[in-house]
Length: 63
Image 1: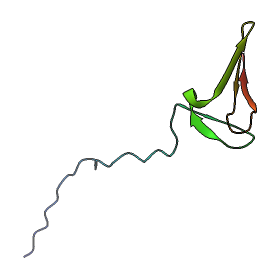
Image 2: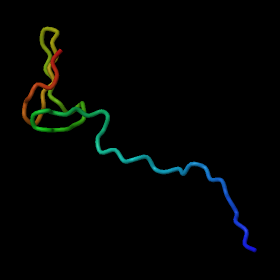
Image 3: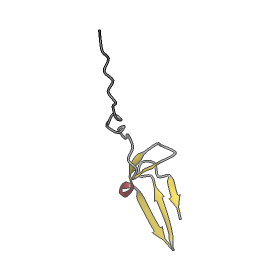
């Protein structure tokens, strides 16, 4: 007679999916440039702050 053994198994630990984009990156909607926050052009005057794409010059954020 053949016996069958049943084993309980827990969740398989797998590596998390690789990230293709950093969470600390900005994206230009015009030229699709992607770069770290500290690589963008920032201009400040009279309390206003403008962040521009270093690739094409598009204003990405204005406060």
